[in-house]
Amino acid sequence: HTYPKMSEIHSDIDLNAKTLTVTAPNHEDLILSLKKPKLAAHKLLLAEDIQVCGALCKGNIWGGSKASSWFSSVLGVRCWLARHYDKGKTEGNSNDDNERPAYCNEASLLLVSQQSISILNSVITAQGWGKHVDSRHFRPNIVVSFNCEQSDTATKHIDEETKLSNPEDSWEEIIIKGSTGVMELTAVGKCARCQMVDIDPSSGMKGNTLRALAQYRRDRGRINFGTFFKVRDATEGSDLLEEGSIVQATSTISKDHS
Image (cartoon, rainbow, N blue to C red; front, side, top):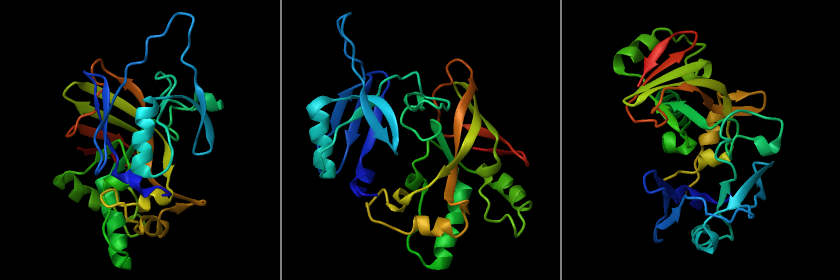
């Protein structure tokens, strides 16, 4: 939350061209190659020590002065772009800081449901705390929603004690069925939130998201919202997630989502 202009930065990856395009208001697009440089056999691409959320990681400074100048101009502070040193280490937990799953907190995939966001917005409205939020406030990889028929059925199972429960809290496994195949994910844990969720991704202005979450999502000193998942199994060709895929969740009450 120290640099709210980060919310104005957007990225797009072209897998065919292997390029990363980064955009921000009032700045020319930054286009970087994702191909690792070819080095002589006796040379190595040395990894730098990088600290992420207090944990020591390894990474390579990427894009050189071109990327550094672009991000520094957007954010108003001197900074550099870092790339994780080993693309293979993107899953699992480890006691070794250098073996952490890339630069994510606990797992590579974060899921939130539209129902959870609707519950939060009802709290914001009830307290008179300003604008509603959307999924972008929480930077998830996967957003799921109930279809109308299943939502009505699910509502019948929600009593007064559980009406503010987020459905993904109880999901142990999910299966995502897309046009290219099937991917199975296993829950790793809940996502503890900080003041970054207060930043409106459209305007960079600060709201009351964390304050609203604290009203009903506090658990042992943590304010949780969203669930981390990791890939358990995937059919060949299913490594790309698609909008509109069917999601089946395994929990206390089985439901389908899309």
